[in-house]
Length: 409
Ligand SMILES: Cc1ncc(COP(=O)(O)O)c(C=O)c1O
Image (cartoon, rainbow, N blue to C red):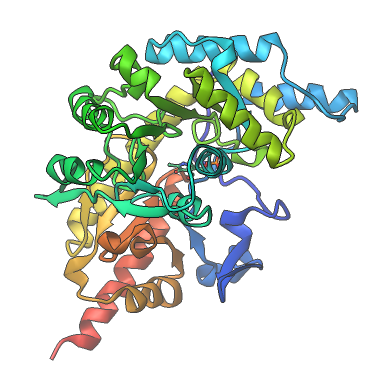
């Protein structure tokens, strides 16, 4: 089957956060900023991690069939759901998990919040690797724990882990948990088995539990290999909690279904109690149907979408090299997000935001939201039709050129 990812799907009236909201005064404000009726003044959103593409046909068909039944009461996933999840993880990552290890949550972010709530005490420290997906910060801080950053090292345009700093921070007895972002959003690293081994050994030596958020694990560029943290060794598997979901892979984040895998029974029981304390039971009816359809029949679509995203990346790299040499792209190994170093523009984050939103009418993720380490960067979402990417880049070039004319002596 062939798929046409060049088509701009109509999102009007879907209340898409990416397309129909802008954050004004810290609140999402509904608007039609992206409506083509605004012509070149419409804002092109290349921010939040949603794809612009229509969902994989087997998912749509399964949802249609389920909707036809007209039965939407409380539900709990059955055997075939768990089989589909277990098969996917075994086939793609070589990890044979057991059904009992899987705990459903309505998203990984709620899952991480509840992990912090149920497994830690107020005042405990939790390590993250900034610049990193910012909801990790609130999951820690909103639940009374203290955030510690083992910030990544940015050298020669590439990111690495700082193992000396990690060893020092892990030695603090108050540090109880480390949240690993694997693959890493926003810097796009797909950690090698060796990097994961070093990370995991330091955590084990210091009794630090690893929560590995592997939501982007299916979105890997050719030539790179994803390794699930738990597959490195049995000791790592026992000392970790692996967060997985079909939401980024198949663009179904709105269906709020994720699978948190916990081998250790005591930890799993504590977590299950934490979930109950939040009054959560059962699952999202459509999320369960979509997840099963995706994992059973979605692989050809996934391969095609990744090929399209890689082509988008090549297109963007060539465009930037030729027309926007002030920007430096951090080569992604995974995810459909690209981390762009804008230091050479010599703009502070607010002026850069103004330039992008008000002059270029392009909405990107501001690097500073991922931590101070990201303040000279912007994150660009490549999962869009090439025509949108081309228009966004063209607008950025025009805005940057105009800026340089006005600021030249
Ligand atoms: C690393 C990471 N974790 C979690 C999420 C969101 O997870 P969920 O929608 O399942 O809460 C995202 C979304 O972009 C992400 O990048």
